[in-house]
Length: 359
Image 1 (tube, rainbow, N blue to C red):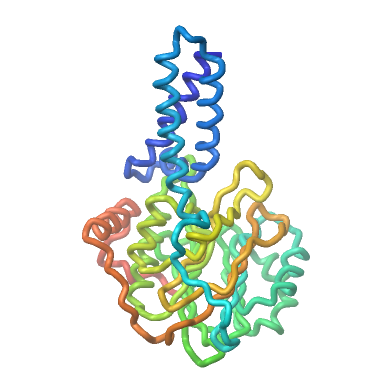
Image 2 (image 1 turned 90 degrees about the horizontal axis):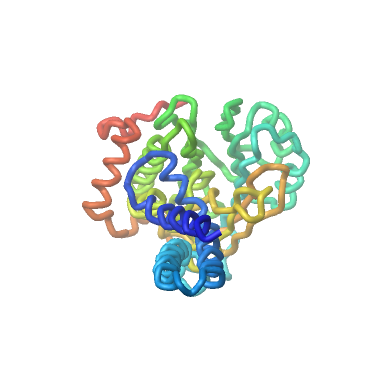
């Protein structure tokens, strides 16, 4: 038992520290995800050590307990920014006029999920201005046809590879599909006209996750490219979708710095969206980042739709003129250097950042 606890303690300590290694290897980057779960596991192992280890080994066990508590504290440190006592990144706005509001519904529907009725019912219930579906294929496109009357503006990219996307809007919308990093993984750049006539920009993304055989280089490169484009626009913008990354990872934090956008969940709540089927193993993969033009009216995680992701809903308030170029701090040289390195690791040349294939 003592030997097993020692082995667990070593593994938990390594799992806490390994993500400090700035690499795109999948077995390192995937450890960014379960920080809360690993933190609680560290507390349990530390407690068992304190209770079960006999006095003759007390000195060694105290050292191991101290290491475990330090590793646990490090894990929880990353997640703490989503708790209510942390300063909010995006201001709240309860009194927002209807012409300044924009509501969004996002859902990774799971490609093989055939429970179309749940998603259709949720879309009708939420009645959002804009709906983004990811992992949607031709079957999902056909199943969502009843929404077409309410959502006359649509951009459809039905794919069978789990990277299809469908963007629906009741507000006037135009846009283009881009393949920034991989020729089978699309993103959507859309311009939406608000009720007050303002034009805002929505970047819809769903990059590939780190997993055995696939490191995080392409995902990280796409986030950097989108982040730089959002900053270069200089106007009201949103980045929405399944990032296949958690908000506290170095990659997503770098994305926020490079893009000049903010996470409305910071200082409020975590809103874990994956895995909907495993209550003890959940973390936030579906994100919304907003430029400084926006305030938050409300946000919520919604009910299950037969997918392994929970849908999310956001209502925003445009508090600044959409065309205003607001001054946001430029990413520091170190962050820009790191962003360029991520592009190289994703096999993207700096000169081609804006040359994504358009359809």
